Amino acid sequence: MNEWDLAAFSAEKARLCEKTDRIPGTLFQEYGVNRGLRDPEGAGVLTGLTRISKVNGYKTVNGRRTPCQGELWYRGYPISQLVQDSGEAPYGFEKTAYLLLFGQMPSQKELEEFLLILSESRTLPTDFTRNVIMETPSGDIMNSMTRSILTLASSDPKATQPGVANSLRQCIQLIAQFPMLAVYSYHAYNHYQNDASMYIHRPDAALSAAENFLQMLRPDRKYTPLEAKVLDIALMLHMEHGGGNNSTFTTRVVTSAGSDTYSAIAAAMSALKGPKHGGANIKVMEMMEDIKAHVRDWNDQDEVRAYLEKLVAGEGFDHSGLIYGMGHAIYTLSDPREQILKIFAQRLAQEKGQEALLNLYENVEATAPAVIMAGSGRTKAVSANVDFYSGFVYELLGIPQELFTPLFATARIVGWSAHRIEELITSSKIIRPAYMSVMAEVV
Figure 1 (tube, rainbow, N blue to C red):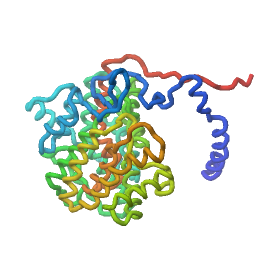
Figure 2: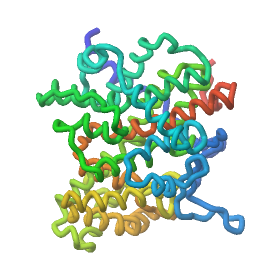
Figure 3: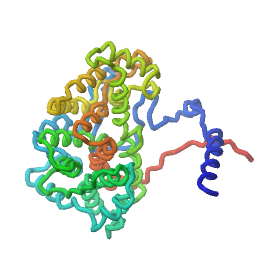
Figure 4: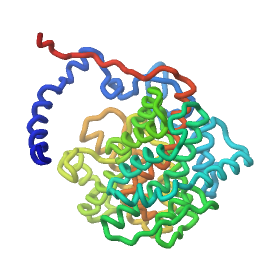
């Protein structure tokens, strides 16, 4: 059977699968099964405990679950305070990584030691870039990174050795290596598939993760202090979001099976690359391009509203009826990450002379919630989420869309690592949820 025979066979049998594998939604209601591990109101089904972070979109008032301004806490600190305390230096990511990994803020001496450890870990095995990354380039940078993560295991003599200390060593190395894996994979793809110039810049030991990402990505290695700080903030905002998000839960599931660090992180990468999880900001960017093409006056809120109404009615863009970047599974009145990133987006847009484009984003943000509520009949409060401005920020930084989700991973590897360590220490049981069989018995 050749490839085309297999494709035809699979297409035919897919129709059979559609018939035999489809389970009516009424059965989920009948048996009280929460689809997607979420209750009818969208709240996550409780499956574990964590001390790493907390996400709030509701508060209990007089015994009732009431929407509130969104809150995100890392190890007991609100994200807004961590951002504020990071100052203008581009090392907020590293300082916050220490907090998430070890559960407490570092002293100046501890931070300097951690920075040195990360700097010394920003290296790859001999010929790894050439033999692993450049030999088989792919436009899907997440796939390239995942392959690289699994290949790194073959260079680690203690790849499968159990223990918290060994896993922590591996996690710290991966945190340091992720910017290299992302940027080098992009350069290989851009050279071999887009016929662009090839250049591989080594990390600079004196620079932060954000600074190194920018200098490795750009041909001239140059960036402004504001650019580095904005990227640093974006990394801070994306590095952790509770144990219940899809990729972090995947990390904990694979860890609970006793698998090694490389396998757990590779599994998390596979979860994050899904467009329902890590690729949402790309849909925002594509939607905004469509809006720019159909709205003549970006300052006219009535014209913006009219086109958004078409989107909700399924008459524009991808006909999905969605306004991307709006709404969140947990947050209701606001997403604290979006509010912080918007401030830095405004600063960056001013530096880049893109105030007009920023104004369009702000008009969409101000108008979309009411349009969604009116057009969809939703009762849950809707607000912009972090994906609404993140793609805009990355575009202003000159980061190609192929790197949007890998950049998300470059931040979230910290949260995955913290949850892996917590799972290793806290639980000895494999995570095994139950599925009820509704199979018809033939005999």
